[in-house]
Length: 367
Ligand code: AGP
Image (cartoon, rainbow, N blue to C red):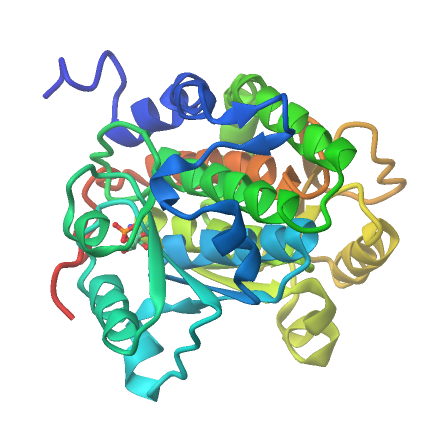
């Protein structure tokens, strides 16, 4: 097993550090510079069919659901069709309306998550078309979907998913460009996203190089019994995933909120004992996000601000983690990477079994 970990102390560590290479592999052959689009032959959908969808519904569980939320917002941004994500575990129990002009997307690392598989079957029983974003080749979800995109992240052993999630995010970006380019997404905007995607593997590498600094922050917050992760719009699924990762392996309570919702209740909990990890990209919501950080600081809440290089934080006290800039639609993918390291190093400081956290299994094959 030590050999399989390739010199890393944990599989999770190995898998985080594999990302620049595996992402490069996933992208190669899928970016089409000539038409500024993505080549996704596995979807088995002609441009004419892709164009006919009027809505996208993403289904996944846990972290796959949160990345699905990121993906839905990429699809709305780039293809301008309504898209949302839902927990696959709830889907069939609410007698969902299945529409023939909706593209259903099942997202799963293992391809064996029972809740997601049953959602696929429910959709198909009612005549819907469902494609998969799946990592494990030949898995049940991959086999049963009507087409799909393999994530090519390679085997993922650690229960806490890292590289497979980043690959899912890339998969959604490719899907969003493909859907966009048969609609209103211009050649120039298609090119902009394709060029942004090309930069991702190296930019992930740059973030991983900050590991020592992030580990110092993680040690500082690991003692807190409870933590908030906050973000807005594109940053909210990032916050949800950050909280999830921390809970899974550090066993600390972490809760994600939309930053805008803080003042509607949770602000009452802010105190020196409750750190907040704030996702603050340099986008149109920057001032509002910074305003919320000041509200937290005024109540003496410790802050970790995950932001872009060059963002001016003024007199805000706390820790900052910078990620490189990409295109705004793709930024959530990069903002998530430091949160993987943060959770890993918090769990390490607390001495937990990082690869096999208590009560959890790598793939949940029962309902
Ligand atoms: C991620 O860190 C978790 N272990 C968990 O939420 C996972 O993403 C979920 O169970 C879905 O698994 P899947 O991607 O294999 O379907």
